[in-house]
Each structure stands twice: as C-alpha cells, then as structure tokens.
Length: 140
Picture (spheres, rainbow, N blue to C red):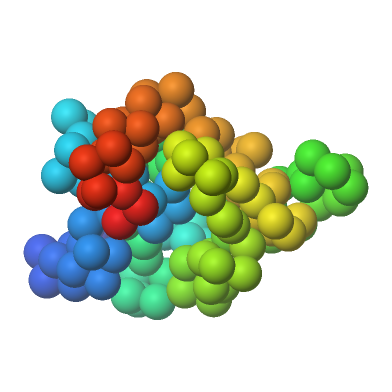
C-alpha cells in the first residue's frame, strides 16, 4: 500500500518555516514559474520519516538533483561528505554569496559538495539573482 501524502497543515508549516524560499538554493517561490515541493531530507527509502524536522521546501531543480542523496563528493578534497541539512546546519557556516550576490559559494566540504551536487548556481537562478539583487530583493 502506498504511503499517504503529507497533510496540508504539514505542507503549510514547512513553507512558512522556509519563508517561501528553497532551503537549498534560496530561490524564492514567488518568482518561480514551477511549483515547489516538500522534500524529505532523509528520504523515506533511507529510513526518513514525515516529521517536520525531516521536511524541507525545495525548488524542482534542487529536489530533482538531490533525489534520495544524503551525501556527495566534495570537489576540493574528493571525500564523500554529508549534503547540507537545513534542519541541522546553519547556512552561514557553509555558504557565502559572491560579491555581486549571484553565486552561492560553498566554504566547507558540506557547502562545496551541496553546491556541486545540487547545481545551486544554475543559469536560471543566477539570472534571477541578478535581477532581484538590482532591485534589492536578493538575498532573501
């Protein structure tokens, strides 16, 4: 039997906690042509559950690239490391913005692996960041 989907109250709580932004690339849902998803940080297939602490708001680009992954290779050290977990890690400890605010830069193995695996600097996101930065609406 298929696992029941998340309740509307769970979905609302996750979206509100994330302030309408993808919890990985910080893409703002209100500027996205695509709907955002509630993703399992630890996938159900790896023992994850539907508790709010295991759920994150994700844009389709990040959600599709993360899929069931919880680890990736750090492109600098070549070591397998955990991906960024928005419930356990502080964004500022793993990422910074480039001076022009268009690129998310990983400053730790977790940050670098996440930027690389989830392609957090996809062309469309960079273009949107440029426009939003110019109007004072980025970073969120």
